[in-house]
Image (cartoon, rainbow, N blue to C red; front, side, top):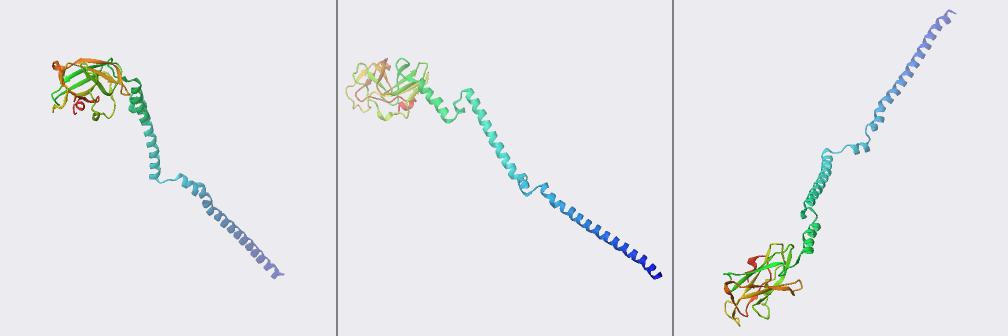
Length: 254
């Protein structure tokens, strides 16, 4: 009986130790699981901080983003400046503010719409002698009207009471029709006789009748008769006249 009584406390101690060891093992296992959960939580929460897709969208190379933003801003700034300048140009009436087609219509079509054919009624004719080239006189036609006029082709000239007009020098055709704004002048050079004296029917003429041509080349309206300088000029059958020219020098090169 004593032996049994002595063994019972030992059994109880072993049982208590076994229970304590089991409890400790269980606690350790739970702690390891919790530690594993805690250790894995950063990995689980990492996508929340920025997934691969989100990071690709939000993060851009500094140079490329600045370049893209700068290009966008530059495009907008240029468009705004051009529009503003064009508006100011339009308000001031400058044809250069509009597009190329608008400018062409403003300077070309509007002038064509208001311009008329030059005639004796809207111009003043003057004839002057020149020293060079020899045997030449210069016809000056000045627009005295309020609108532009076209000096088409060459003038029809008749010295005194001649029946036939003076022949036109075809090589003197200008590149464009001469347009005279109010106050501007056109010029035509007249060779009264060749220097070699090969012409026929030489005489001294005292007046000259100048008639304008219309767009088709026919006479337009009545002519203007003016007196010739120096009491008259010598003319013969070799006389010629140039087309109307915008510059005086161009009328005297023939």
